[in-house]
Length: 404
Image 1 (cartoon, helix red, strand yellow):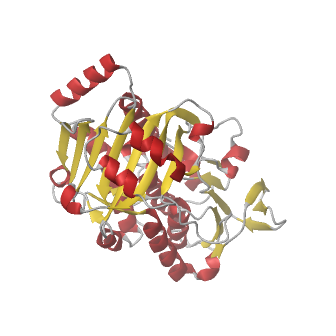
Image 2 (spheres, one colour):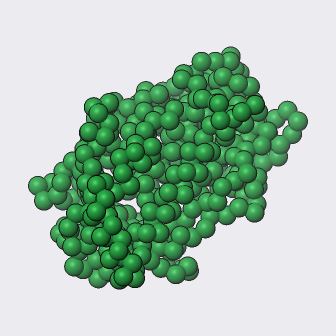
Image 3 (spheres, one colour):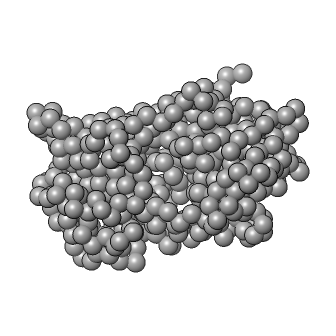
């Protein structure tokens, strides 16, 4: 059968199901997938390794494609109401001089909100509340750290560090870039370091001093800085800087990095230094930037990977969380339409080409954005000034248009 002919079903149309699903990981990907599977008729549980829902991260940009996925889960309007609408996208140099600007409202021709920014924890809370309403509080199994699984002829057994195990018909690995489920399925595939570090923070800042409805990204030599409003007088910002592999790209809280960041971004236009300095203790996060090579398949039998566990990409297009939401809706619709494991085969055929394209493009943008050589960055900056719109309108439409 020609997999290129597959289309995502446009609703949870469905096969009656009394099947059980276990989702490993209660981040955005896991909660959205559990909600989608519940709508598809599955009995769902979510195993989370921490004792409560992990409220980690900083801001999150949700582009038009992610908002359409949230609409399928019944959450778009609430997310738009809680977040800050983004109407414009501007790329500039480290002096503040513009390279490229895009009116996002024109790009989408008034077809709903183009993009919003909100705190990652707020989206997670909305997804969790919706899931608890649909499936009951018992849907979440906290303090359950998965160590592996065994795939029998009829059922899958999933094992945990506390010695317990759970049987299910469908196992979903939504456990992130360092996925335990993926390591067992594909032990030879590991994320590769992209050569730079990203910091993220949230700071209070007067909207009168920024574009209060736009995303601004500033490109320098070997470093970039982005900022966008996220509502309630807060600004979400991120920064990147080249770094050799090693301890410097270790993930975690990064309050001790403030001095280095202020030095690295000295000379960038206001409010870059203001935002770094105003970020409260505990609200600055550092991550090495990694991307996962393409997997031969996202699952086997009744086991499937979604989100970063399946296709972790660098953050340069703002599509990591957005693609996890697309995965969630597409998986739910596939299992509601076709029996396992045919549904999982079709799910992979539907989703893999899109995320492969986005992952490659995101790495290319990051590679160019992190150039340090003065001659190369001069050529890059001149070329971007001459382009009507960086990446071009057709490319942006392809990235951010709904695919489900």
